[in-house]
Amino acid sequence: MLQVKDTLRSTVNLTFDGRVFKVYHGPKAQERFDNEIRILKYLEERGCGFVPRLLEADPTLLRTITTNCGSRVEHLDAKRTQELFAELEQFGVRHDDIDMRNVTYRQTDGRFCIIDFEFASILPEPGSSAPDSAK
Image (cartoon, one colour):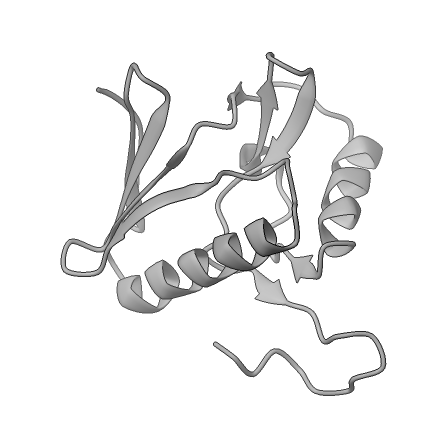
């Protein structure tokens, strides 16, 4: 396994078979773990193809295993970054951490992808004024 991130909030490792192991720690780890799982399931139900797929979630270890969405992006202009996160909102999710560090590039299909949904929120359904209350 290759460690790609080790911060106060999480540790992320990549396996050589294409899985991403993420362990949550630090402030509100359980809340962030639960939210990321909820958001990834929501996006999968809606057919969003440019986010990781949740393969496994272990609540005792606060660990998720997802598919790999490619490598980190080194350069992406602000306009394209905004377009990408706006595209995510068409699937009913606001990322709430719009930054290039949350964008990857998947070489297999030439697609920019979005990762890291700890702070994301589900948008109200069209015609509904209720905020995301299913957290």
